[in-house]
Image (tube, rainbow, N blue to C red; front, side, top):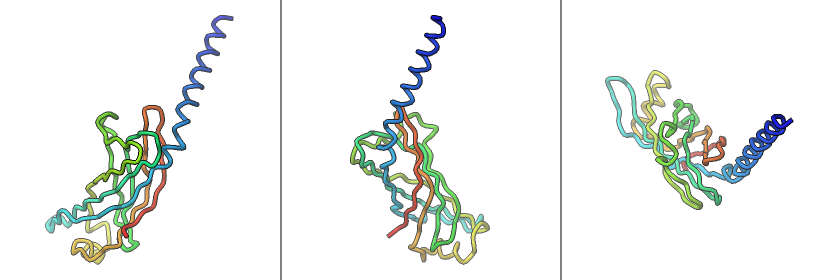
Length: 159
């Protein structure tokens, strides 16, 4: 009987921990993300690739402090899909990541490699010549506290 009581107590404690961790979720879902800039940093004419610096501005309007381990996104130019990219700090421990305190807004930069053979050559030339100013991104952002992790979908464009 004591063993059953201990097992029941352990299960109740684990359920309490899961419940306590889920209390952060509504505040983590308040994260705001917007596409700040897309800049050409390098064009390789031999390999027909271009490196773009994609900058997202992430804001924490809630009272809960969190980090951002992953931003997965698809990048569009004039409504045409250029490809998929990912900002990731998953390999860095939580104390080493950018910390989003209440009210803080931090730019997160990522290198996006555009390959000419993956897109229409006209779009590739327009991007590498700097003729396109209408960039947009959609994807998901993951926010994390020491107790909880959530993923939120987003859509954003340069204004």
